[in-house]
Image (cartoon, rainbow, N blue to C red; front, top):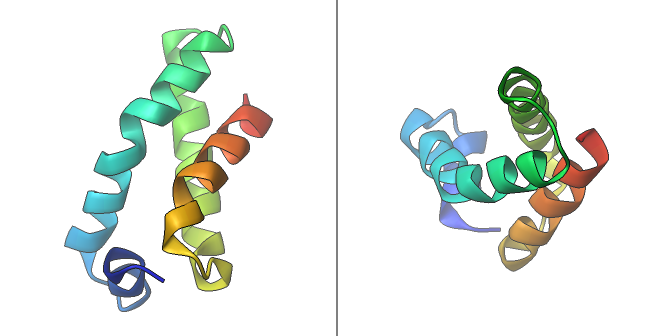
Length: 77
């Protein structure tokens, strides 16, 4: 697992901010592409973030995190 994910598990808020920052554009673009309004996209972003937080302990391969985020975002949308 990547250092940032491990930091999140250790309650490192800067690691969490780094992960959200890294994938924010991806999530927002997928949500907008799915046709969500700004308000709905904001709500969906929060849902993706919550799912990511809950799933971090189970995610073992940091190089697959972008794929996980993309797939989860499409499901939420």
